[in-house]
Amino acid sequence: MVSHATGDGAIPPRDAAQRGLKRIMTLGGAYGTRNYTVKDLRDQKGVRVLVETVPFTPEEAAAAEEAGVDTMKVRFDPTNPEPAIAMRRAAPNTFMAFSVPLVAAASETEAIRLAYDAMVVGADAVMCQWSPRFISAAAEAGVPVQGHAGLVPRRSTWTGGLRAVGKTVEEAIWVYQKIKEFESAGAYAVEVEVIPEELLSAISKRTTLLTSSIGAGSGGDMQFLFAEDILGNNPPPYPRHSKQYRELYKLKQEMQAQRISGFKEFIDDVKSGKFPGPEHVIRAKEGLVDKFVEAVESDQ
Image 1 (tube, helix red, strand yellow):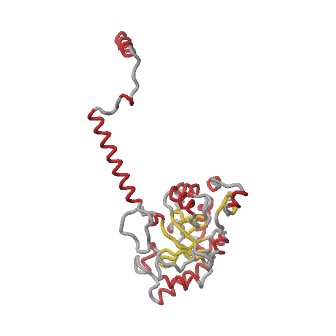
Image 2: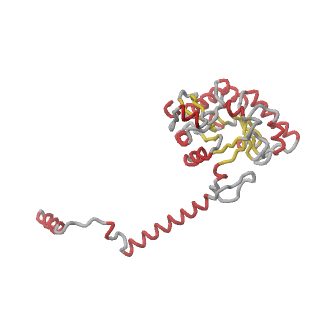
Image 3: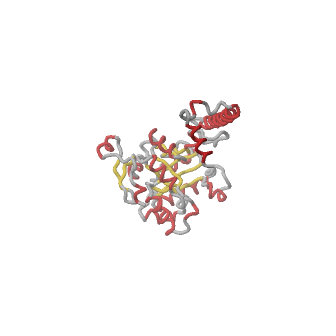
């Protein structure tokens, strides 16, 4: 398993230093290079806002790394780790937290095992929706953990559904207390989703955690947006907090139209006898077919 975590595309030490990359060894025991370590990320708190995204394909991961995205989150399925491994290989030099399934761990022991499984195949950290108790177990085991506060979609029944959280004093205090619990549990960061911008700004100043803002304005330490929103992979309607910098869904529609058109032309050419043409076939040498027929018929 350790071979999965090796730095495919690993950079020689001198070249890595010139590019500002750090030589690291993963928790799984593989050498590699990264743009940030956890310490580097934490050192950026209050200095500058980092940029974070979730790619859904290796091509998106490679593009994000080439563009200079600071950190990525990648979905990790312990029953099928290959997609996450492909993401790691596509962006070998970018700090990457693997987002682990909420229901895949039902105890501290299972949380540690799940976190270790992610780290062995190339994660630099895990992102989770766990309780502080599970986060504490994984953090004590040496795994960097990012929690999730504010609107947590899979736990949204407790906050009134898929809506903004923290719009009352009681809710604001509740969000803050959750983040402080993650801090006490040993997390290094927390994703904060869909709370008022001013509230996140106030909370960020009162926690040592890196706050990753998605739908929570500019008050966080990291600005987080899904790659599918950045690239416009899907047509409207879009989440209010998102911005589309490209409209790839239109390109996909154009490509599909071209596919259909190509198939139709192929069908028409076959029906009309235009395909295959002389340039698409192999011509038999003169007399070959006559000799073939003579030889076959003589055996009957």
